[in-house]
Length: 239
Image (tube, rainbow, N blue to C red):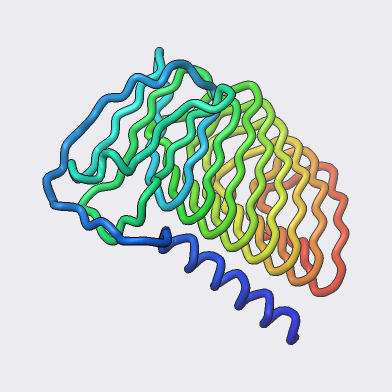
């Protein structure tokens, strides 16, 4: 019991700390004059959101990045390419803002990451043969997907909400995080939940579910093949 309480406190502290997005030094307050700025960043097939940024993804015919924020905050918002990855972040302590959004259009996408209190949303259905999603440190992600292979990881009090379709799904949730994929229908599912984390998933054909240390895997549907393992207060059960 003490270990679970301690873990919960760590998760709450981590989420709160990163969601505040503070830096050492003086802070900046948005002036309320919201503008849009289109940025030329080059090509990319992965997206990473950091430090409290809000990123909205649209799959389209080309790559495009538009920043919508208070005009005195534009210089604090970074949009740069690192090894085919578009990294969206801030480089200053922003105390408050009217808008702190980045709208990203991408033609092909292989991976999306959110960390440190950031938020990522899809504006339309993200289609890909293989897609890897990762959240950590109190961040959030909400996507509509259509994939053949989907790999999902959530940790440290983060949350992923998914809907759509995937043939193959491999999900791992830990440290008080949640993968809310009850509206995602998959054929073949491998789900791992531990340390107070939860996974919800809709399965048609095959389920391999494992839960430990207070973790839970909740599944819907009627999979033809079910293999489960639970330990240390973990649960795998039909929702």
